[in-house]
Length: 623
Ligand SMILES: *Cc1c(COP(=O)(O)O)cnc(C)c1O
Image 1 (spheres, rainbow, N blue to C red):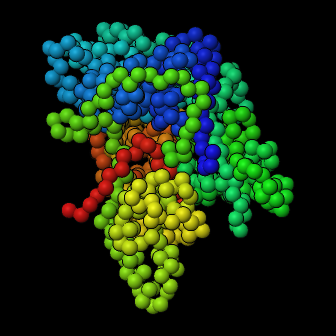
Image 2 (cartoon, helix red, strand yellow):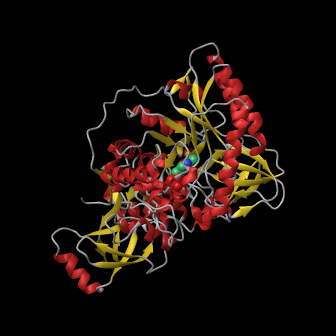
Image 3 (tube, rainbow, N blue to C red):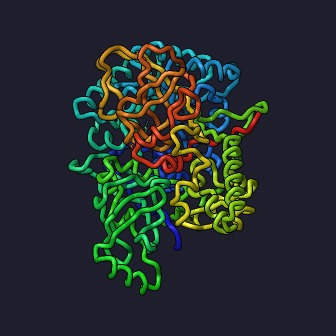
């Protein structure tokens, strides 16, 4: 019980599924994308199925194959794919594909061509844009897409099982308009000769507020976790039980009281005093600030009283940062940070250890791991979400630090003092780079690796752990992170983030985009879909500010940031599915990481340290 930890109550998940099943009377698909909104995909999936869900849903094939590898044999639906997706991997592992454009059907045709005259086919659900303006087949493409799908089915490449769409939740009238549009699509599909047995439109909110949207299946996300999809003031018709608690021991040092949880593990910055928390002895605390690596708190009882209480308690009191039992919820944090409960839990880093209660016997690991390669090539299982570490630049910076250290020693600085002054902070899994890599490099250059907490040592790597210093004081000095180039506006940063366009679509004036329709096209324009959301790298707070670079041009993120994706306005730029997107980087036209940090209100090092598990890290070495 010594460090920060997350506790997940799987009985709560089972109870939530049962409660929604009772209300809706509809078969349920449990949405466990983004590591089950931060709760742990396999554990939640198992509990949700035990609670009565019949299917699972995730965003991409890589997430789906991880579930298969953990022994799940139920239907698994995926709905976001990259331009180079290996469709045969879906066939091999029996994963269902949500398909979002005519172009994607053409890609399927090419990728699955060799299945013709075989008795294998891939199960497909067509995803329709009925007004959300993100991925999904545009209404003007419906007829041609249905015709194409019927052709692929006739040739035996696919088996069309479902038609689905997603509500924008922009209001009752807008939801009703989407429902009507979905019904038109169903009629058109029937006229095009498609027979689909599974029609689905509603996620949690729709399933509760618009019974007509339930059709044959409800895709249940946030309510699985015991959180309401509705904003404060709208009552949730189902009694839900939050499943997640977050806690950490309270420390006192000369700078005050604190716990080792900060922006770098996904906690959102909040104004001083806007959140009050209890510890596990019942004493109350006020949040003073959420820093990069820690949460600073003040006791309501007064510092002297708290100090002597901490001194006298046998077990170190733990601060209940998110408390499933009641005192502070994900909603408390969401209200203080100006965001939604979804983002609060989903952004909690996988570096915080998860503990589960209500675990039943694990399933047999019956299935072999899906193949990672075909014809000697790495399989493309997810859209590109790549954090590239510039190892050469890191080496150059380490070399500079090593020379400075030598200079300080030559000038008579004591060896111990010098080693600390030129140490390299490898906390927070080394801020996107991988602590193992950076600690190893530091030692190679004769520099002392340093971490803020014992928990950070976990990521440093066996051999280098003994050589790594734990020193909270030193990591608060930005100089210990100089090698990364985060703060210097003229310095290149040692990581860059790239993605690809997952969809491109032309829309007419008046088209609303993303949840709540915060952005509406004023004139005809081209929209691009970038498969990165707040689960990955892009906090909701950047909406209305953030930009990415496509083909050398800066393009604004429009509408709300969703968990798995954002939409950008490409205007009249020529663009295609698979076109590279630079989020931040070091090329002359790239956006600097610091700009992203300021849009999101986070420290630059915390911004990268909080990236989610779908981001793939690659190292670039000298050629
Ligand atoms: C995330 C997601 C859901 C789940 O939504 P909740 O509001 O969390 O219930 C359902 N469908 C799709 C397509 C999604 O991306």
